[in-house]
Amino acid sequence: MVQEMFWMLFSPEGILVLRDGEGYAFPEGEWPAGGLLRQGYVGVYQGREVRWGELAKGFDPQAWVGEREILWTDLRALAGIVDSACWMAAGRAYQLMDFERTHLYCGRCGTPTEKVPTENARACPACGLTVYPRIAPATITAILSGDRILLAHNKRFANNVYSLVAGFVEPSETFEECAAREIREEVGVEVENIRYFGSQTWPFPHSIMVGMVADHAGGEIVPDGEEIDDARWFGKDDLPNLPPKVSIARKMIDAWLAGVLR
Image (cartoon, rainbow, N blue to C red; front, side):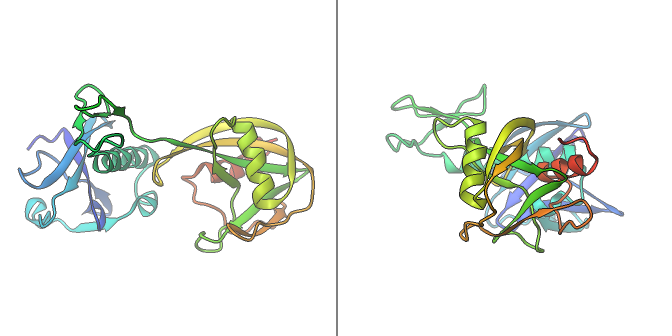
């Protein structure tokens, strides 16, 4: 086996991880011929090459890993059992795998596409269209008013979590325009002094979250009732359940709690 390489493998059941004592690991070495529907390069993690693979239908990975216990998980759950760099690699692996399997045919003429050997792209041999992995930018904004922060509950959130207001950038919008529009649409308030905090890739399924900070400029909170069913001002001593620490939302909230987000 080539021990310098390991795999992030995907199937309809999720991501394959192996129980490794008190921790977790990923399969190593060359994968059996016929075991993968498609595969590709992800990058390097802790000096080792990382590859993604989509398991072929009907292939039993247990035969390859021997007696090691297989666990199937998803990207959100994986964030709780591996470090952030490994989780980011898994997110990249998933996005590349999803791109390959959803762009097998040309969106312009329907011809089967071919993988471009020098970059992450697929090209149509008939009409020449070249496509790249889709990246969907979105803003996520910490809205401040004095010593309070506005947190909202999306109907899709589990565990009664409250988070920052977020939404996808529309054609021709700047990040600042997107942040102001999403805030107005989802919670009904106006903001000003919009500034940049940082960014984070977010593979659900192919976003990049652009963190912004804004000051409340006016208006009362009115949840839209479609995505947001509750939104409130919170102080540092009365916070609700918060997003996981791996998310940029939590990093921004923690920065506000520490007094460095103003």
